[in-house]
Image 1 (cartoon, one colour):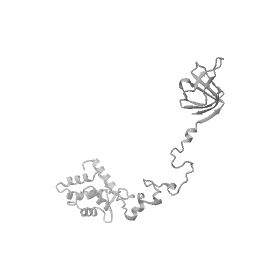
Image 2: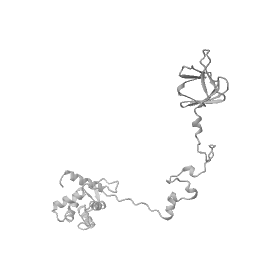
Image 3: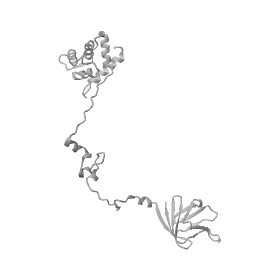
Image 4: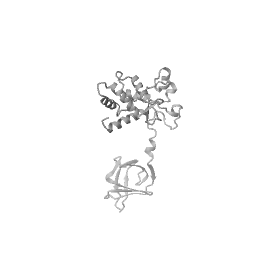
Length: 265
């Protein structure tokens, strides 16, 4: 062959074909079946100049009398035997070079796996899309089993009717709600930009610029001029105001203080 690289490539191809289909093979020896596959996959066998019969005859010729396999050196002799038949218009050396080039760098061609064919009753047993009745309910559209929910009627004890669409949203709405009664003070002055809430251990300071009152009849004004800073409320029944994401709901009377406050965070 032309060089060491091609020699190594030829030896590698021999090893790959030698271990094909045999997990216990070492790659040092090749049986007759794999030799025939090598000749077929590498186009050494062309059906005219070199036939499968020629391949078998050469294999028997180069192997030992009692052996069933050939080693790498015997493999090269087999190629040398087939070279003049495969390339009749070339010299012996050129023919051997050409046949080695057919094999070098090649590896076994894997034949596609035949898919299992299902017909008749077998198909009806394995195709979940064709199931009917209660069996159909045990699988989803992809054919995956639903588990217990596909075998039993699980009672819904959530308390919601089946048509209700907002199940599970109540807790999310009220989990940050708390109420306090009798706020101790709501203080500030007409000049200040903040309104201060003091309820038990809670203190709130709200910028007036961020305060939205609802309804519009709810008014804030400074206390009468006695040096007090309490804010008096002018409303009649119940009102609310919103600050950012906080919603304050007030249940009030005509008295100038709050009887209850609900903070919704």
